Image (cartoon, rainbow, N blue to C red; front, side):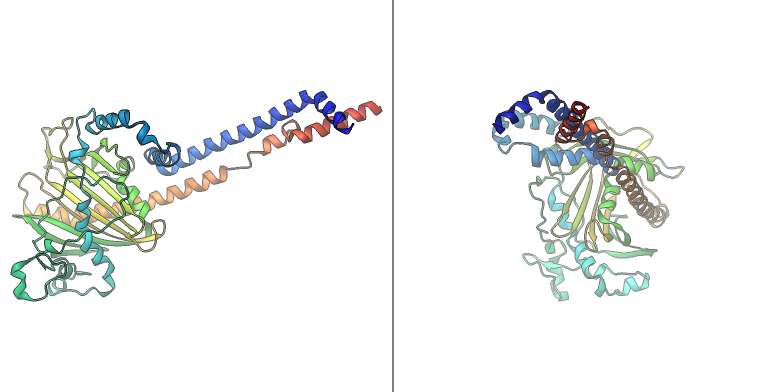
Length: 423
């Protein structure tokens, strides 16, 4: 009897039930839509358009793609991937991708950072009034087939610095290995150059009167992740680097986990000198286990960006950077060592080279540090504003009785009907 009355009541109130249910679904849908829109705006303001795309790609590969995508899409996917690797722009990433073995050249840079508390100056570094000495560690030589440095002077003739190279065994997961290697003169010795502010710089002769330079610095109040962002975000670099007249992304490696890009860069030089421009490949990796970040650059070629009259194309160029945070990637404090070399292409007086190295390079690194500070500050302000904007979205819906719970709506309608019947 009670069950029949309950069923009859449900049938009589079906219209009100559906209406209340639709109101509830509408409120939930509107709430979720606004929240998704706010989250999208938030991440876009924090990471930028390029970072948001990378975040979406990583999420799509990890969460949304089916586990059997490789088997199902093998025929179409591989063909499409090969077409994209060759690229409509004619750049073949299979042949031009930077090798992961390039990062092994940073092993002694990491050892240098790790042994800084016990660093001692050699005679030449003392005469140059250097803060730290890289020569004693960087110039150690090993016999062929051995990885431990030779200590006896008699063994130096049969040993070399390149013999000491060992793989870093980085956690690169499924990143493609790459083929292009940096050709550096490992067997030439490092010598102190100068120290200025927080920067210590050494140099090594690569060819006659052409040097590669190694720069060490530490910053206590910026994070490694922010520093990496400033290094790799081309849009942001156009804002803080006034010497970058043109900075364009030509191509991006389509292979997941490669983190490789082809970039065009025009650099402004002082008056009476032609501007320099570069076409180069960039690759970076981030090892979460070892808490290390590596960035590698090397000159490349592209048919759509030929050398232009009035500019000097720099083709012989490479650089390596290792970033080691004090603790974590998101915590303030980091060491970094930058090693770079470029052949300007035309003879330049030695005093101009010294001016560029001793003045322009520290100024550029200082601007990069300031840009990282500004980026961290602006990101913190955006996060504060966005979280402040996350108000209780339900208020405008719950304030309306019709958009409350459907059970509450039914109870209110039943009470109202009873009161009218009593009247």
